[in-house]
Image (cartoon, rainbow, N blue to C red; front, side, top):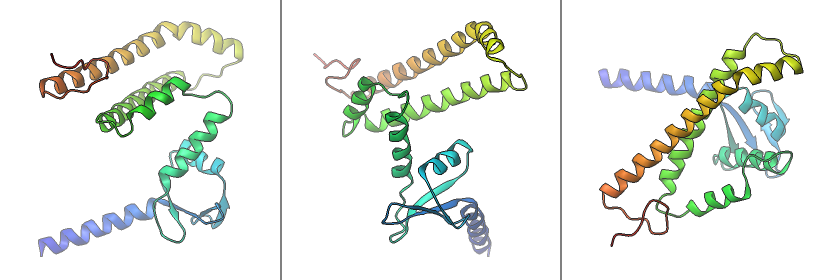
Length: 189
């Protein structure tokens, strides 16, 4: 009976969780349909959902295949091709080189942790400046006063990132794993 109750509780929790996920359907004509608002939407609308922190998933209208990552990558592509890109050509080349490499999973985890840490730093900065009405002149003054703090935060972030990578390298070397051609992983002699 306990198992049945746990099963029902888990089922209820899954149903409640599923009810909170906004479902977008992608049709063969490349249009996105928001099942919550019963209307067609654009990638700009999906980007707004991401910025607003809304939980959603994109499903193929015919097969129900999860297309969320594909849509998010399309948004990143649009952002990279318009305006000021976040990734340099060199950065993109380095990322591509990790695909199919033994370090692919490690690199993915490393990037995810670093992006999360950077987001937390950004949130702290935003929280500190909340409630302040800034004119362009006041913003310049504020940023000038914050520069040492921002440098400290970024310095700490870079140091933490460097330490994490160093620890990963040491652990792999201790395990006897060799990655030829990778900086920090010279072949054993």
